[in-house]
Length: 271
Image (cartoon, rainbow, N blue to C red; front, side):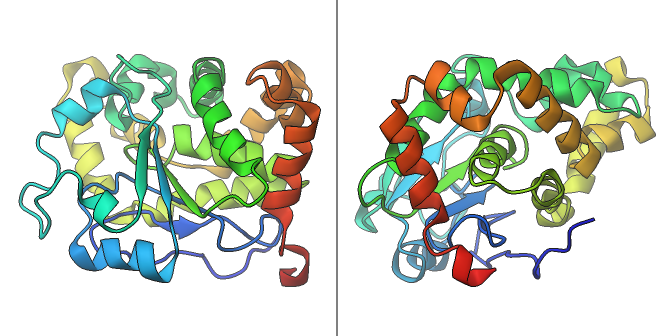
């Protein structure tokens, strides 16, 4: 297994699974990933804006997910839905599945293969994400293809599946080995540790899963072997991350090259 630096988690009050995307292959300070950030406290918002310099947030969630969560900011220190703008951050809604509820629990129910011990369910789910998410992902890729892209945050509900596939594509494009990509993906198990029990107990209440605790635990996991199998699927289906960007997302050769240059800028001296 390729060793990684200390887990790059960042304490942003109100947001789970928040970390920088780097690990020596993607330059630091440009990309961040997290679970839903709309429960951030004022301290969390200040940290994103002032300390991390984030200027754009890309929300990959579906409409039903957002509606199911109820009023954003409710019960938190912040009660203004336009609060991001006050901190100089633009929020863009770019759903992978606009009208489908695609939270971690709903995905688990839709792809019951998740409950099996192998990686088949994850590969199927992630294949569907790649097909349905090409427009959403293309928006992020074009942001990164600018001459001077600003720091951005990418998130879904848990920051595990839709976010994880997008980040894996970027690591792949930067030339990271499969082991490094899989290890970075597996960090989500640490990032969601406090929420995992909640996910599992709710899923076990659903009769469709028959009280299969072992299967449910597999369903909400971020095992490195699932990402390794996904990377193999990407190679077979698309050839490379760059080919996916061109043929599925419509980026030009020049844009694909700029994405690689920009995400790798500053990475080599960190290795």
